[in-house]
Amino acid sequence: MSTDESLTRAEELLKRVEAARAELEQLSTEEGGSPERAIELLGELSELAKAVEEELTRAQRAVEHDADV
Image 1 (cartoon, rainbow, N blue to C red):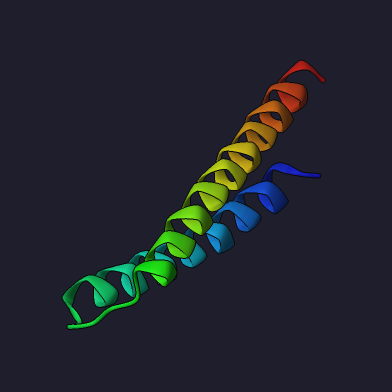
Image 2 (cartoon, rainbow, N blue to C red):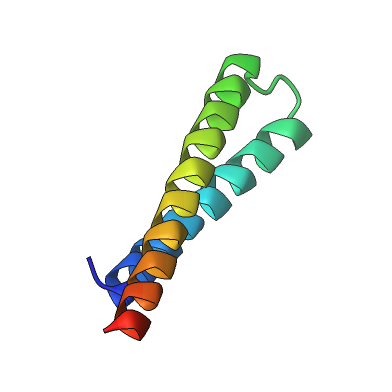
């Protein structure tokens, strides 16, 4: 996977992080918000953060590889 592809994927994942964060914020301000959904969102945020980190690591490796070539 190229650097650009990894960065594009990371950007897409960050958009999903922002959407989940916004939903979590909305749940926290709503009366009677669902604690179960909040827990699900926290789990999603954790998984997304790991995926973003992986994509950024891939991009870094691709940059390093291109510099070596």
